[in-house]
Length: 232
Image: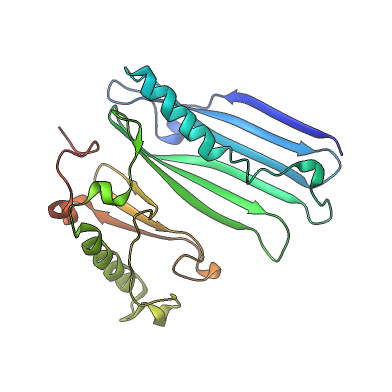
């Protein structure tokens, strides 16, 4: 079974990802890595971000290495020579830009994978990067002590309101209470914090992803000061 690997830079109009470079943003290009077996339904397509425009080139290199390793995951991209052509293997990944400033980027890495069975699976990962350090921030990096617990209550209330229920289990969720872990998927915009739950995380696959947006004004008392996405 012959294997074809492709590695290239694909240059889209940056506005397609809401990341057109201005004096207040960095450049985010889209790069491509893919492969396919000629005689089967086995392939992968990965579109991943590549940043430029930072004054600190050491941090820029570190961030690009981190993003490359996060998107081009060797554990997900199987040896296509060993792929079962009867069931096939499909892996598609890309990204969206939620926020892009000189100090901070918030990226969503989304994927779809199928390796046999009744259906494939999909989901998203978050990359919230402080561009002064290159660190990928977790929820606990944003909130004062007890703040994540307060956020959990707000997210639970918003889900109850969205589904018009008093208890989340009435709408099909696994539990009535939302308890956000430190590694919870989240994104940041100019005005909100978006919490994303992937399929099977808090509800069955059939309910899909659950996205809850919380205004930054609503949680400002719980946030730490001088966060990289806050106005200076």
